[in-house]
Image (cartoon, helix red, strand yellow):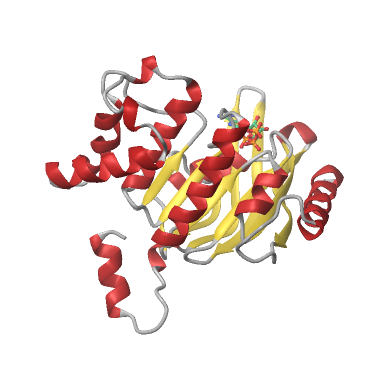
Length: 272
Ligand SMILES: Nc1ncnc2c1ncn2[C@@H]1O[C@H](COP(=O)(O)OP(=O)(O)OP(=O)(O)O)[C@@H](O)[C@H]1O
């Protein structure tokens, strides 16, 4: 936990609740003005995510999942409604929000270790502390042997692991992840899901996680948001359902309760 976040935790009595991870979306809409006229990517999105909660977002292609994440990351503005993180309006990117998107966003001229240290140094971590933290996170994603390699020397899946290590190293209050494991092979994907679960339990970060895999959503999340619509479907993207995942911490992906929930969510995705 970062210095600021532990200070917040130390002041509050009772369970640790880091309010800086709270997400509030109220009546959120995004309209793109294009040559062919306005495109409503999303409309009327209401969602409250509690600090420390893990919310997965699923839905057919084009329903606005990435748009919502980009808005929360501060990469683009919304055109209606309110978007708040930690009780403050989002006006641009910020260090309390860690972002892992489909493109790895690594600096090709820096080594793996330098890439992971970069954000920490930007946040004024000392050289020694940044070096130690980077080494720890690189170990977590299983890339210690490659710490001195450049991104161009690694596979896509390995580059994605570096991007994940880089974001997790900074211990953000809110993690925004858009298909972060989409490019990984099945075995690495399972390992990374485990690690993400563990790291998130340790750090208490709030996570918003976009995935096309309903199994992944049910395995990781406290709640699954099902989105529907999309500009190409003639209706703006919107939230069609929010499904709580009441399966406890140890989830058996082959268990009947797990599979039932997976089927229920799949039906909601296909209906919408
Ligand atoms: N810059 C843009 N200009 C115009 N329309 C856009 C722009 N960006 C996104 N859109 C439209 O907004 C809608 C939502 O796109 P978005 O990428 O958020 O969907 P998605 O659910 O993440 O899709 P996928 O699962 O395929 O990644 C789509 O119809 C898309 O065409």
